[in-house]
Image (cartoon, rainbow, N blue to C red; front, side):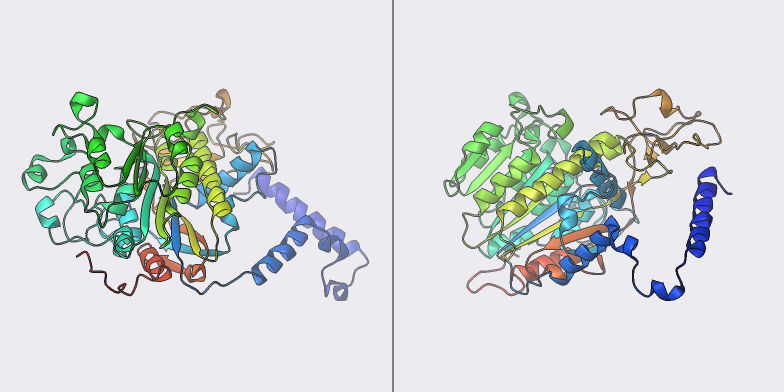
Length: 503
Ligand SMILES: [Zn+2]
């Protein structure tokens, strides 16, 4: 079908061709770019990009440090919409804008499927990146053999995480997230669990409790000194506190107290206490800034917030971990990109993506890329689409409708951003977004298929990298490859002399 927009595009092409043939130019004059071509902004941009990539540095040495950023649910369309949103919120051209990590020179695509699903969840995906093998959805730190929720079968199926291997080799390790610290992605850094939901003891199934499986919060706090994280920051305080103390734990344990009882261990509960931490003054820091997930960036007060932003946590984490002369491994998760997408809420999806961009920029401003490998990726995609023919510079949270009207069969407008599945879907006829403020922060985009919570999407996600061995981020790779690359870059593929393997 030829739409009005198509017809306009075709008409434009035909008149351009006629104008070209009417000019005095002969084919020979096209042997090189023309004068108007050379001064076109995109021509200038293309030349600059070529020069930048030709001059890019291949760093073949080992990395002292690795920082892995994970945008949870940040698929390719979220990155594109995120860069437009971030540019437009700064008052600059959104379409030609780049997020901080899009400037990193090395790129690959990763295939995210798990051992039992075409579309991965955050547990299996983070576990693949952390351990170098794939597992089942809902499972972390185990092979794909045990079924989800089977505590007994998980015995003997444990696989070492990169953080555990790095700790055993004398490096410091850390995990930072805007989600609960016991949530799937950060948990995959330190935990081995047959079920991602076993965050506190109250969440264990009776069989798992009887079989002696430990909840994820306990695994974080009680892991042996040789593998305990040096830094863990995020939300989820309730999973660490007894019910009597306002928490969710039925076993009466106060895991914050237990953490502080460890050697040279500190606990911080707000941004002020976090700021007061000094590098080298402690070996283990636990920061829990909310009972549940941290607030979305759009809902965090602009100033005076007691909850640190992802950028603030990232900055402090790098300052603290850099005190270790042996180097560090740090995982930083923008955990709530995913939550906003599950709610079909594009405004928060994109503002969380923009905050991840700021966190990466913060890190790049602090580290030396000659000794620090910086990787930015997603664990999986979401069913967000950018569709329609909105005019250039149209607000990315606006309507896709162009000057010819909606062109839809139901004569209703539609937003540029929609979702494949989620709570924005409806069995009845859809709402007309022209009647709504689509740029409002809680506006819910429409979805094709009604689901209480949007499903993840299964297409590949990008990996961006710079630093030592970043050139080995290339091609289309399995999600589990990232572990192998990071382990090699850190020089952990050979056992360090005098260090005994943990398992
Ligand atoms: Zn999710």
